[in-house]
Amino acid sequence: MWNCWFVLFESPSPYKLTHLFLDTLIEAIRKRGVESLNTLTVVSNNGGTASGGGLSPLVETGQISRLIMSFLGNNKSLEKKYLSGEVAIELTPQGTIAERLRAAGAGIPAFYTPTGVSKLNFLLAYDLISV
Image: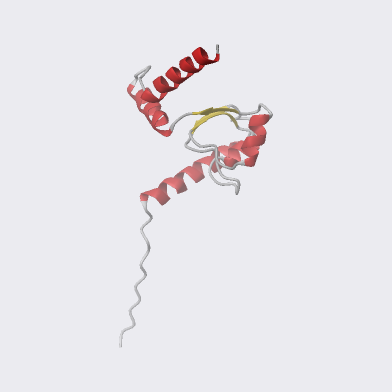
């Protein structure tokens, strides 16, 4: 009688592979230290998690000086660094971040988004009303 064992390895999804790659890259940047990498501008959809995931290691070591993101999240370390002026944060809608990256890659210096226009109209209307 033959005993046959099959080991089925789960093929990692592209999502898992992307996160594994990003976590490895973030850890490598963190290991380089503040001495060599200390004024990073990072574009991300969030600023990391309170439990230490995502960009949290770079925020805690002070290697990030500017964050362009669409969601602040619950990263208390990032909040403290922002309030003390150590990190500059630019909140941008997710679609605008994607378009900025696409346009920069294509060599397009400027583009139009309806989000910015409606905000401008609101601010102009608000200024007229408050006068």
